Amino acid sequence: MPGYSTRIITASVGNHAYRLRVLTDLQQFADPDGHGAQPGISSAQWSLFGQLWPAGRLLAQAMDRADVAGKRILETGCGIGLSSLVLQRRGARVVASDMHPLAEPFLAYNAALNTLDAVHYRQMRWDVPLDSLGAFDMIIASDVLYERAHAALLADVVARHALPRAEVVVSDPGRGNSAAFSRLLAAQGFTLQQIHGGLDDDADALPRGRLLHYRRDMLVLQ
Image (cartoon, rainbow, N blue to C red; front, side, top):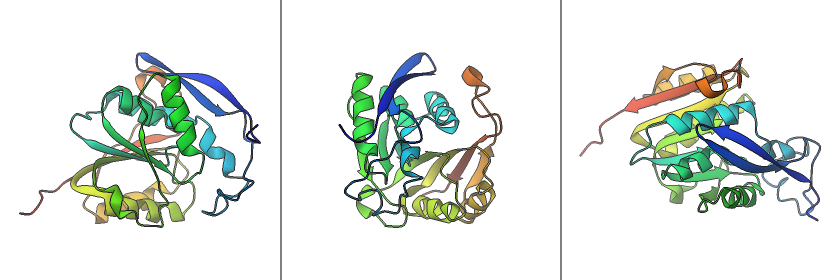
């Protein structure tokens, strides 16, 4: 036994139903070797990665409709990885990342549940540069601005890994830190393109939330 319990749920995104292994509830916790505590994941935060949150569903819906042709895409804070699975099904070049020690095995299991090839995964902490990760045309995340410091940390990830011409898509349930993030991205040359709530296939998924779509159109200097 791994020390925590799981269940299988089904989430509909577009015309596809995705089967997902998630933690049974928010009371699950197992970190006997301290792999979660080492990067600063407390016992209260440990189970958050293993749930399908409304913001995660909203981002997955957006990725089901986004123009992803030819783009290299990074999902940061992927959790169980629904958005990355949607992109994988669409044939996109996606890299999923998270700092939680169980995100990778959960993502791999969920890919197999849906008869998809394994999603390329990199464990990443926002406060530790990972130069080998490279640069991306699009960086996506869902409900990751739940502490004040996260706006600056995520903006630093964008500064390190966004190409000169790039998009950033963040689904946010209105925790109050998105304004600071928008200002930091504006300083990097990004313009906020869209803010709206739930998408057509689940209009009530995130009634208080927004999908924040930033775009920077900068030509690479030769």
